[in-house]
Length: 173
Image 1 (spheres, helix red, strand yellow):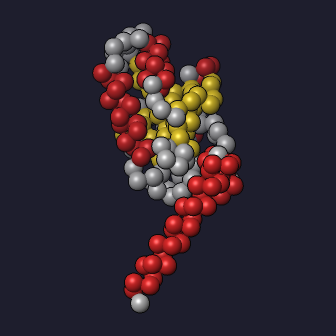
Image 2 (cartoon, one colour):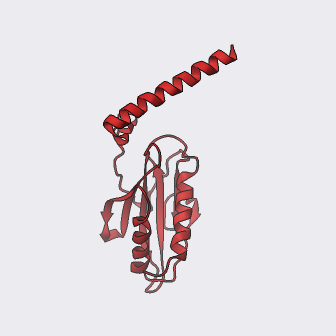
Image 3 (cartoon, helix red, strand yellow):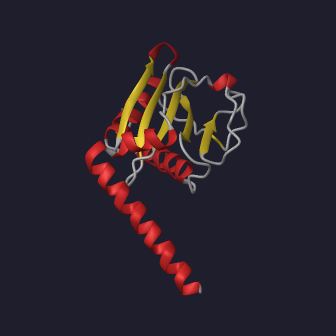
């Protein structure tokens, strides 16, 4: 009995995989995700009024007292001007696979990037705001979130921690 259930489950997953592969080849992965889950619009983020979702598929890094929402981690402070930090950030993100700038708000030093996951191309958005702390010091606020699903298995947190490590060790811009 258990063997028959497992065999049926395997066949069902194989069929779903086959259908997905055929649709992905003909329509593209992004279009399939939109058909299944709806569009993934680029949403403006105002860190001072941000309300986090009730799902774990997000990660917020913020300086103390800057964000309305409780941050998952405190932003690091960089001993460099805000323009230099911004240059390093953009250089870092240019090297990231499947990552592109989707919204710019230079007046507020706020930018949103769309990152697609490796295999299925689920879209995640990362919004960053650069904050001057005087002439030679700066920080940033970062909000990374998934568009689809409930859990991201910690991917947003891993991504941002990795990027912050790389940013901290990068030469000044």
